[in-house]
Length: 624
Image (cartoon, rainbow, N blue to C red; front, side, top):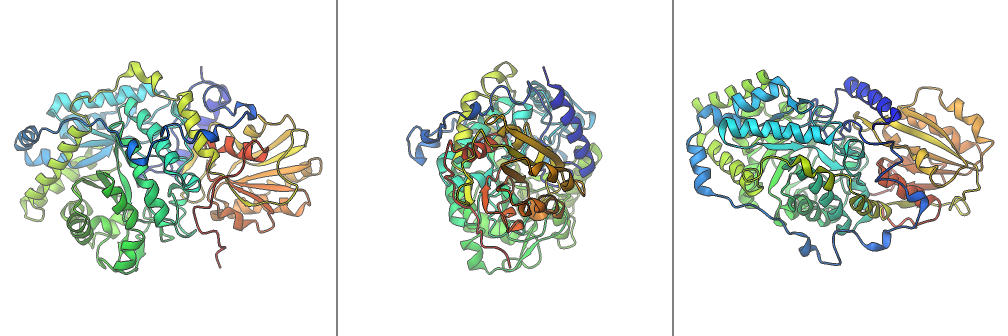
């Protein structure tokens, strides 16, 4: 039975989602609006704090069993029948080929696909669907599984070829599947970068792979391998592992293998990295002018390492590397895709664009139509986040016309479809296209998986600053929590989010002397005047921020705390750079996560149950 509080918050989140355009409205959808809510109240079931009980942090990660990295890669791939691939290809009309290279949005009313989604599958025969939160990844996991079952049946019964069914499930705040809609919360990439051990990264992506496979997903647009060496990119923020190419490279294989082990095609993104600039390719075209040698040693390196470790799908980013190709964005560049990726690296896997309707795609196409340009440059599939039949139909016509007019080689289209069909076979879409709705309870939201994710989170918290005598907090102290509630807008990306608990609510599991002053983000002007009278009656203040580095409203809201004379502990739940926004903060924990497991870990550090064992994943030298 759903709690009234959770349902009310869901309505607020959906309203914010609609106002912001929602994740995936004109891009890859990361930073997801977090779907709906299901289950009991958020302080029950998997995801509880164990009331401050002992840490599992010494277990070393639930999925590794003391083995080496090589032991983790144990996929059970299905057989690729090349004769069957050629038979299917030879039976395709040009229009069917054009449809097979499209990944389009997929939406449902419960388990029933909406009309445009059904037509895209049954009439056009598109190659795959991208399921956004709310109408794709839904409140009830059985609805999501039922929707996927129904669209796969349409595909198989219509043209005999199952779909790639994809989503943005990166972990952390950028998770379409989370504790609110039946899944398991994980810390997120930058928190895993702070934990630094591939074991924890593997555990979290192994959990994601298990849950996605159970629901019927066979493709995940993750992990994010963009390096984030500076504080400028609000769109990537905590979605990247680190600003250090070596650290990102060390964690990338474990993330890919965790998904692959469950027949989920991990799609490393955004090749070859969009995290080095301050521009958001959803709205603009980022440009980086580094030379080819620096390019190979930095942004390109994690992708190379992941490919060598077995990654078989790549999402191309909309960014110009002018030292490599001064004319086209990466997703439109044959120099980068056919030259460096295919020829230099020998990469044989799938290449799919980020959303073709993003501004960066249009601006990076050199004045050409981006759908055709992307395929001519070397992409195998084009992502169209829209689910509208007319938009998909128009793309099919554009591709077919380009082949007929000689602007796109049909042989290149055929090569792309061979890769698509072969990977659908390898990842068992042909052998097992339908999810087993009866088995969901044995794979989703498991307590054992929650504990594995919590161990990762407990190793990720960084003590950035510590003032003597402030920590650990005591249960007999009067504690004031000031910060975000359960609904917030990400100041870096603009996406709206909902979580299953606030940081203040988690503190109440550890102490009965907590007073909470919570606000949605961004806070309304003047709200700080309402909490300041509460400070005098407290012993210590716990203040939380989420990407205040990108939000003047948050900085104005929290700044008065540090002039009160009371001890204040700043918890940066978003980017660690928030510490710079409050130079008078003397105790700062970089939590770098807004999901339950990260909040539990932060509370345990605050009350001295565990130590802050994480190390910074980014350069914390303050910007000039």
